[in-house]
Length: 366
Image (tube, rainbow, N blue to C red; front, side):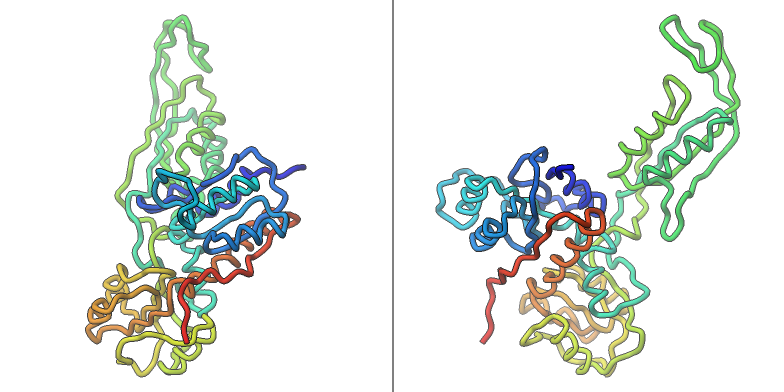
């Protein structure tokens, strides 16, 4: 069976839906037709001209990048800058480009989860959980069909609360309806009010799964016109949000820990604030530019916050409450390529995947 671009996208987005991306982002299929067949994919952090040449040499007609090639609209495509030249080359050589950016940052097992793996963190929690990511789906089902409908909703992703699944609330009652001449009622007679013993089912699910859950509900429900409600919730989603905080199995001397981080992330230098803690045990992380999470890291009681792109004046905000360790944007996100490889290979083990060997980091150190 030929694999299409849309099949690869489905695998990625089942792990990190594009609905989870930040409002400023441009994750998703940037260049290409989702119906096109794909021979091989190249995984990278950034799309550059060298990466496109690498894809051509490997016979890969799909590039999956962490950073979107296009962030804002292009008014001209005349080759005057790197982005425009990459767009021209990708289209010329029929190479599709897909980006999985802040959506994979915002899942607990995403970019930051991979960093936590590399550091060895346990007892992990999202540093800044997102609100408005959950809805409550409510429906009313005749008693003999409750289990079928409930399980269909669970299968579609509903009823997951933290470490528990198949979660629902059920209440008994009765419903009434009167079919008109165009109806084909499952129970009851035309033009007569019918009363049916029903169970009210309430299930919580992520907002990006609501259409799939509603489709499953309708397909499993015996009624011609099943009633249901979708209610937005303000609850935070503990599995979706920015950054991660976790703990080391045992405390490490601060200087030993920082030296280990240099080895783990393969960096020559670590920019950091004063080493106010003798030992490190609780660690906050955010791949890429994470200074916006500093206050959350402090509130979480972290001994150190590992991220990148801190500005000079932002280091003062540590105020001897936490150690900031700036390891660099590229350096903290470098494991994203490995993460994408694992996600796709797990579902499509025979598909040809290549991890880019091009170092796209624009920053160099002497």
